Length: 276
Image (cartoon, rainbow, N blue to C red; front, side):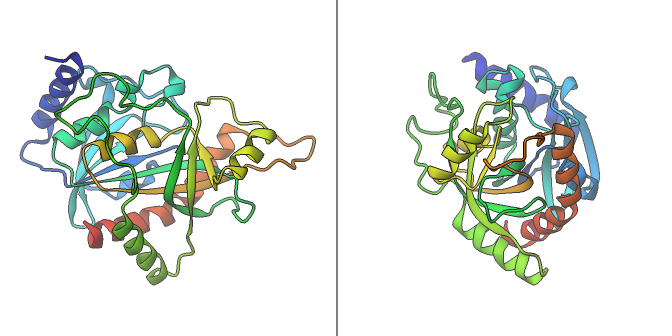
């Protein structure tokens, strides 16, 4: 057996043993400072990544490192309270391992979130941005021998983020009186924050927000034809006209994400209730 599939299957067997008869319908990835949504999950079973065979450990700021299985919006969900990043030194096989585990456990759609810099001049700290499309500057997680158990060698990426879920999210936001932006998310490797010249370049090629995650997970989900909804919390202004003493600070990013987490949690909960 392919060693990747063996790792996935071992993790699936362990998680099944912990959650019993629960069948997750929705997978959720919670990024930097966005773990608050996990507090809304009823009847939670918490599974630390370190206990799962073959799993890495999340080392990023604001990432607790747990699977949480329970009920949210009337559905059984499986949330990642923290993710894995390429910049932590993990190969893409491990970055997307939790997504593939959730797919094997039966999720019908995937919700992803992240903290991102607002490249678009119209964005401000605290804005929520529905991800309409993305630009990938990270290694593609599908490079290498194809895992036929998940999908085809050349999966279509015409609609990486599900149009129906986006429409429903806009309707939900309007009903909650919540303003949301919409745009293109760009992911680079990190871990250094980008230079002003890079921010200017990203804006020129069509990005509205920039981060260091999410896209590999989306690609892995779409490889298996799992619909995806994505949202960025704008945690800093990624511009190229800073004052001389300006500094991007990781703690500030997490604090800004935490401040916006309640609004994102309400939107995700209602969208799960209506859209899945």
